[in-house]
Length: 295
Image (cartoon, rainbow, N blue to C red; front, side):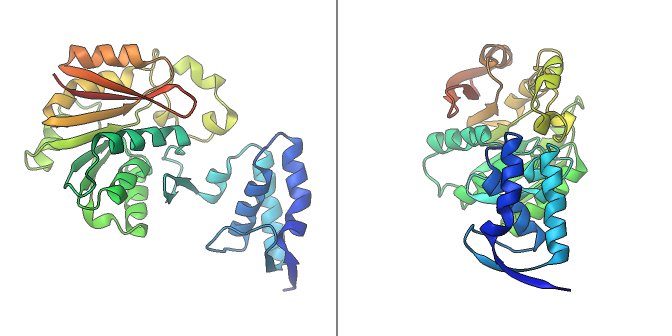
């Protein structure tokens, strides 16, 4: 097996050009991430770093570039994504976390300033666990219950919690919010103790809008994590009516929402005994997180 000693930039430059030609603005980073995966390095390579690489590894790298050229997201090729302060593994059952969802972390931090308090947190529809695990990392004395209908998603959450050293403060619940009594089953599991914080990034894209999404989203994110039904409200209509049974009197609820959905979600909350106290905007100025308390 022949080894080459070569600098990273020389190796990736032709592939960067190919990616840029099809409009991929992150061509340099994408190439370095895919090359890192090809040679199984633990840390992302830099442009002017020299590496030893075999012909087999070069062939692997060029194959991954072809996948990227075909529209597959880098995060789906390498099966991981950076979110907040950490790196999370993904699989086909988990939503690919995006920067907009970090707005929810900011919102919680703004409302719960004392990071030493022992908070009990529920992550509804946890996916990769990026939201709940990010909060566990911020609140060192807290615990999170991860709730998901997908066993494959919960396996990834467990994997991520172990890798990040957060498993001892994590609980994994295989439940479905489509079941009528999911809230009472949850409270039984929790020994009749309620939560200080409830977070959720439910599916909220109207069914007819999914076909309009970018290829990287509609073809690679699991439909169950995207499709919010005809008006995008299906998950909220199932979740919100149960939240009074789960949240402590002085607790707070943080829900991610889609663009322009604040009025509809707020109405559902008010109809079920909740009070809107804040809308948190994302970096684009869109209302991205709605914060409720009990009336």
